[in-house]
Figure 1 (cartoon, rainbow, N blue to C red):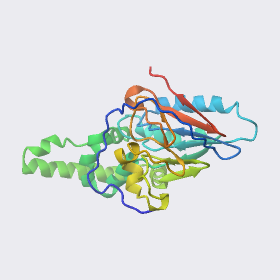
Figure 2 (tube, rainbow, N blue to C red):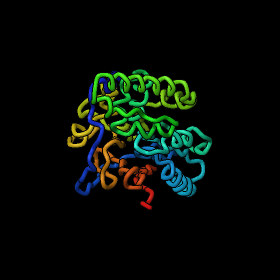
Figure 3 (cartoon, rainbow, N blue to C red):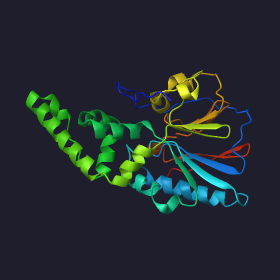
Figure 4 (cartoon, rainbow, N blue to C red):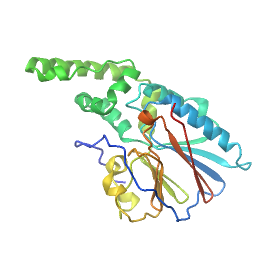
Length: 278
């Protein structure tokens, strides 16, 4: 796995993707004796997360005895939603103790980690939802608009960011920091590969960069070549879950739509669960 986090400016906002109805004819299998549930981008909506996990818990009760039950989270737990901290509290609590869990890194968690290393990155992070995460931890993001007025205002804004940065580093719960740092770039189980954003086509997994796994969009979505595994991903919001022979896309824009989606992969069967908009 080649490194290379998003050190350059990235396109982080995406319009809702409008896609034709997909058809999947490829037969893929989950590992024998295991039922996999994959959950798309949460973005600070603990309310939706709790509802979906309860749906998964009830659904899993109908599985044959002895079945291993695994939930794979596809990243982007934070940002945009004011319950960002609450989402992490839920994920590291014992409320998921009856499942095996796999937590992948999303580009928004990568942004938080980058901010922890570089105070100046805060100005960019808040443009795509980092402000809501800071609010959820009890911090007021500085007003960077005022910094455009003069050199002195710019210096004051930078000083304000350095103060927030210092206090955030001091007060971020250790268990949250350990969670963010423990996130995996991808997970393989049976005929499925789980990743936040997608993969560069015609490139073996060991040659993919972390940057692509967290950030890629069009090069992955618009290609027609199949991978060795069916890729299960989030990152790019769409009107509905997408399922074809290449990929299963599970980002249904939960923060705005109220629809947090999950895939259930058991044997050769593929089905979906989601929360309903209020």
